Image (cartoon, rainbow, N blue to C red; front, top):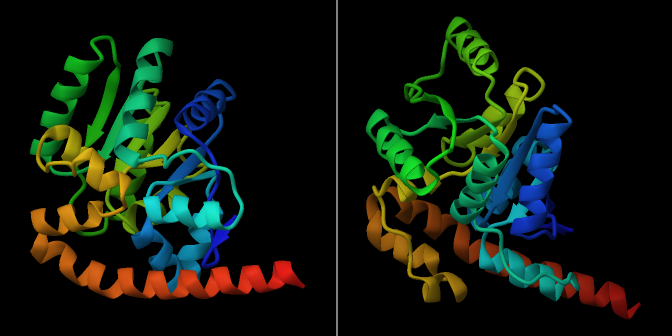
Length: 249
């Protein structure tokens, strides 16, 4: 189904995790986008970014507003596939199947805390690679070294925590160069490293997680939410009206 022109797949945690494992067994290079309102609006505003998301091998509905929209469009879907939770499902499956994982993104401190917490939770998990890239763009030589390292170390699942839209662009650029399944997990690195608190479950369930995150990081997020959220509501109402009119005819 397409929400404001961006593809969103009706899936759940088990289906998404099993799909990742299947791709790894087939030795395929794939990438997964985890979509929320922010990503939807970035894709709406930038056709070239929309193409990157729509070219992904799986686009999960991370935000409750996307789940509600899918339901209004007639898609049966039980719940969202929230990035930080999907990351844990994938890590659990990686531990169970002995699949080596890598971490790309975040600060060095965040990565150290994240690795420690993941190893405490999944004692047999194989984290064979982690890299905190600089804020600037990598030189072609540096990028080639990253690709060489990830492939040489046998990474099969690469969790990418660069934030939207940077991580989706990065995954698209590296598909087929990296023999891995990439998941763009955004703020999940900070959450699971204990750097940022996650919204309470009740706030997540009623779709106001954005408010909690705004309170936690007002300087960084206020412009994003002010720009995207009101427009999303208006544009979705217009899309639903168009869809209902089409169905009547």
